[in-house]
Length: 250
Image 1 (tube, rainbow, N blue to C red):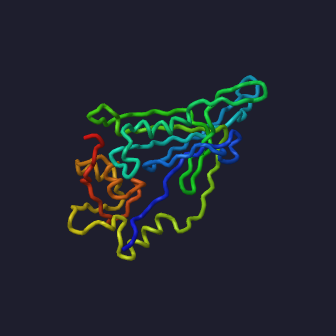
Image 2: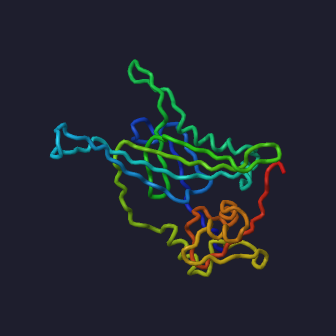
Image 3: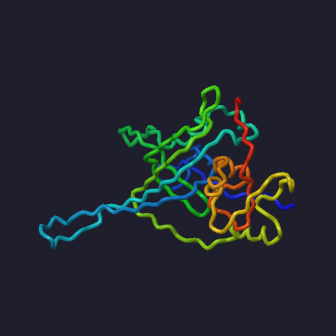
């Protein structure tokens, strides 16, 4: 039997202050769900040359690149030792670590700045400083503890970053194509005939299928089907849109 598809998960890695390499003994976390999308923004600071009138030349003062994305955390989908976690903030505080200023010495001067961080996902990486975090807690246990959270993150760097396109190797798309060619399915491994399954058509996403079914939230559907990139669905892929969710403390 073919193993279920396992996609690479994104990571947040603490870097040295010079951004040259990971910090020795620094923090490193793996996300629970890969982001649905990444948004990159590029901006130049335009400075005039001091001449008056419309003939004055403009110069680029400094450039910045900003990366924004969302992360999701859901305790109801944890298994093993992590299933003992009762408050989702035990997970989200690992992310807010990267926006918390830390004391650094520069000669005789003491400064407080957030740690340098790298967002790494497959062939994509972005080095910068986390300049904003917005956290939403949206599902609570009977004991009043938050079980789910959404975090909107923004990272920036003081330069225009050029992202090189790397030729794909045996990547996720090739592994899925190979799996389907062998008669398998990314959702293989479940007893056949015991769970109603819905077939994905070209261009559909986990979010779209979950919304159309009126059933569970898309994060639960993604986890139940072993899908770690919600927009990465193959035409004909079968999904269980009615997963059974266990809520801790209930």
